[in-house]
Amino acid sequence: MSLFNVRVYGILLGKNKEVLVSDEFIRGDYFTKFPGGGLEFGEGTRDCLKREFKEEMDLEVKVTDHIYTTDFFQMSAFNPEHQIISIYYFVEALEEIKVPLRTVPFDFDEQQLKIYEEKKETETFRFISWNIFSAEIVSLPIDKVVAGILKEKF
Image (cartoon, rainbow, N blue to C red; front, side, top):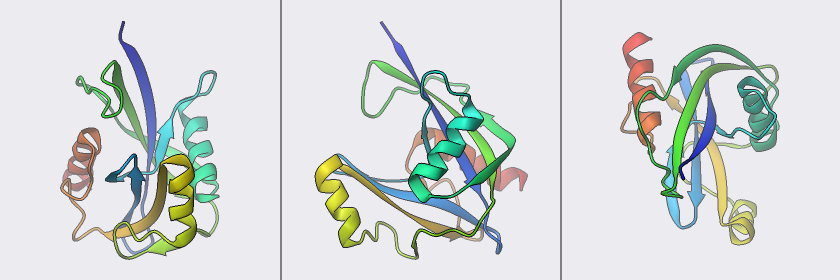
């Protein structure tokens, strides 16, 4: 039996035409991806994205335009019995970002490394200049498609 894992991600553009990404250390592997996460039962996709930004960044966001929904088969990197369906929206920050923003990939501080020891995952955030942003910057296959769409359309 195949199960579907629905993921919802937000594209937040900075004031200087930059793209927010999350650098994550999960179960011993490093990933650069768009902020977001898993849809919970009983939750709408936009509410999911608002919750994920609040949980991960303590940031209130407004979810705006839909960008893309997965239109090909993608098996989960963590569970081969799960098919991933990802939905991407633009988001706007409704307040100043409070979490530390990094300039170097995977620049985890001591507290984030402690979280990793407990949960086997941790994350940090950074903006990437539009000039260097590309599909090669992000790790996940669906994120790469979305990065390509962003660069092509905008």
